[in-house]
Length: 334
Image 1 (cartoon, rainbow, N blue to C red):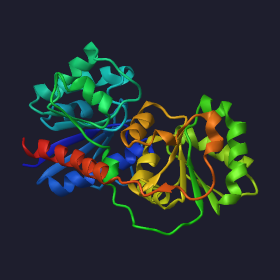
Image 2: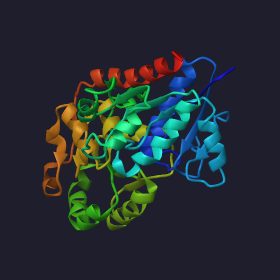
Image 3: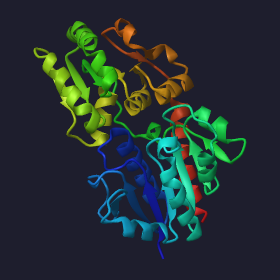
């Protein structure tokens, strides 16, 4: 009888980072866990295009599928939470009851390479979820320090560090900009476009990367319209892996989002991280490159030309692989 595994996260939303995480995790499990059946529960209604045909997909919030999702959780399958900021108070409660259902049915609960959106506290909700967890890997040192005194948790790098990218030493003259839509960018739009205009001639082309269409697509199109006259490409209708290849090939990366920064680092290039949130700050702090964290009034520090390169990411690539191997071992040991 096949071993059953359910992967649940912020999937089905066409989100660059979560799609990459799911694709990399899924391929690793299918390759390294014998006789396994894997199904996916996501946030969006649309099935991710890269899922194999024999992998079922269920939207978490769909009323039509609510009864089937509950049956899945009560099937004795192992349940893996990954993708998105799972330990945030605003969404934590939705996982506590399903975790208890999985445990009652004889399954196990694993947290895979979990990150945080903001600094958090050891609240009753966190304790309630962790009481059901059989294995936990964390990609941020702060989260590990918070939980390691009470539970056996592992500190790892993001699994996306293990991505297999085409090797290249050539330059293509591209500036890639990954935006995060929202009021903050809107309030700085004029200065940001002014800066882009001032450096555009240093590059052959500018790629505007849409990491999350629901938030980033409209603002990317607005910026492209304001940069009329320059060679600007909007990268939005492509698979996450193809987008990652474009990030890795770019001469310079400026990002407001986490996973373009990770991909750039995996390719040996230090990105500029603009208006960073907690998780971007944690990443750049871990690699010792806080000098590439910039606020809006520091835009002029991002100069045109070649990126800061030669960064040694071998340790992070190893830890990215280890996060996948840990999950494989936990599942295989059952």
